Length: 210
Image (cartoon, rainbow, N blue to C red; front, side, top):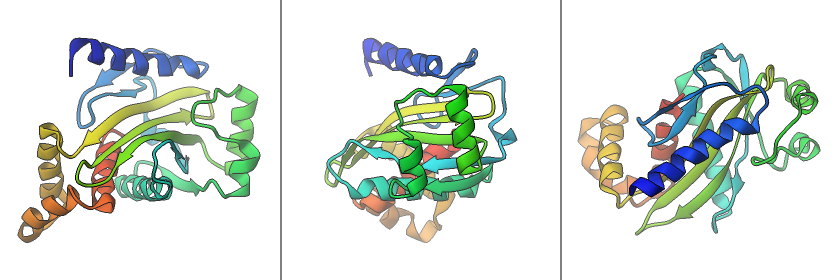
């Protein structure tokens, strides 16, 4: 990544924090995803229940909205950081609240979301990119909002490309941590060829930042 691209990425992550009233100072971490924000003034583990809203899909593959949201839900459940509720786009609750990922919300709106979904925070976002084999790639833009205080707790923007050398190394590490040794070689090939296996890896990486 060139210096100019890296600077643009950092500026984007910094600007996200200005979208939510009350968001305070922050820091940028590099592992396991390249760029993500985490609010240093509040522990995500203090949140009781989070509603994960089915992701908006800007890719050319409609099924990815369901598949990636489901994979994220499962990966976050395994982390056991907080309780989780899934809100699908077809759910009347979603339609009534209009939880758009790039919208800003007043404190009154956030209080209404909290009461309706019975949660303390909401995770919303967009699938910015998806490409199938042989050039497998997935891009996500996500943010977690504390509905109790109107703060941004966490945010991430990342593109994973299976042909990238760093991503290849991370897939190997992921397989070492999650798969049996007898299946590592075959699963490494499957992860770079199967959309479902690849997004499981992507979701695993996202979960590690929380």
